[in-house]
Image (cartoon, rainbow, N blue to C red):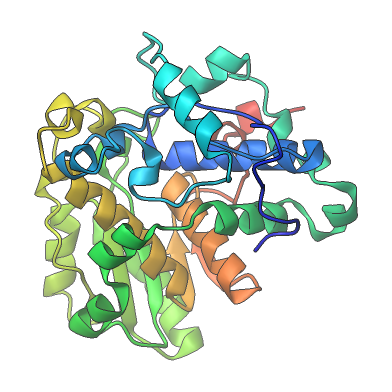
Length: 323
């Protein structure tokens, strides 16, 4: 639990947001968490989440509803349902600034700055605050927990401590972002794994990646003991950004469900590892580090290959980090 009580029905809704990118949207909640806390209001998500556009979510009556996978953020159930049904998706093809554009926040990152932390917690710092808020927001519902069956999975794949967590993000980062053309194979990460292995006396590595080729490299590697899930990454092989693939998110396919669940699985397992090798320009890496710190109540040893931790994706690049 983060500081403060769970929002209750007597408090009004603080913010809503539209849904496009799954993990970017979870971070949007963290942006507004301090606002809600300071204003003594509950949080709720009434926008549409592409990653909940699956056949199973439709069957549950939760099509494009984030509560298909996560617990409600407040007890304002009636208000939330009303706002969810009233919400109209904006006609904007933008996976990062659509909610911000509606709220006039596309270039305004004030909510992410340390100055937004409530005064009595300010000495703890921005990372502590955001990891506490994320731990509060990132609560899976019973159905998701049952589908993932994390403890059974750990036994099946040999997930044991001590263990290093490695995140290799490729996917759309390789062809649609400023990093296009710079994605490298597993070889790039081995020196950093060796550093961790030497210092902490373990060669066991949990690998979270969206690239089937990186998985193949790991299976052929004899230097480390790679712990791998058996989820296929072939669904992620596309030149189109994953959130725009209508075949996955129109309520007719079960394939998107495996993508969402495997991503949640990777986040939870990375957060459980003892040491981390990450790419902190990635939302998933940042969330894994924050979840790990929130659960362990301390910052775990980590290496980032592409930049420092930052509270907002626009603040990870120096050109946006001037305020």
